[in-house]
Length: 171
Image 1 (cartoon, rainbow, N blue to C red):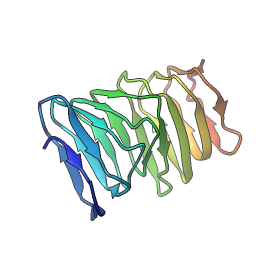
Image 2: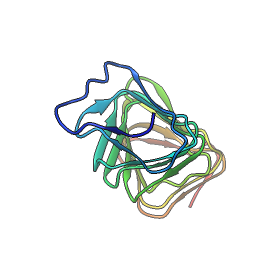
Image 3: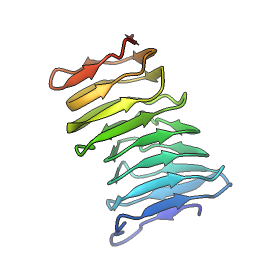
Image 4: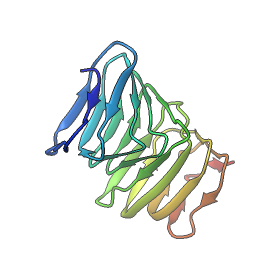
């Protein structure tokens, strides 16, 4: 569908997939403090996440279309996969999958800041190269970069975790 707005009460994702398939522009996504499970954008349309903070308890996937992320923080407990376009909105992407191996795929889209809090888990950047216009913080777990260039315009802090360079370059 198009827009999804929780305007009162709560939304129980029940481990399901919230699929967005619209082909028109101007769609709004607002969880209003509720957590979603898997969020999947598959339409050719565009969506803006209007919450300051949003959380998915599983994967966040943009297979098709354009998604503007929250201006605050989007927390993802699984894979963060962009196959089309995300607009970072100067926000933070917090990756928190502590259960295993997860993937960060950007397909040419820039993010602003990323915080990896993977505990005993890990995240792997599947792109050869990627750009962060803000900070990269790895608080726990392991983050493996692509084999190309990882550009970080802000601070780069891995003091509490593991950064695997994968024979790539960090700028």
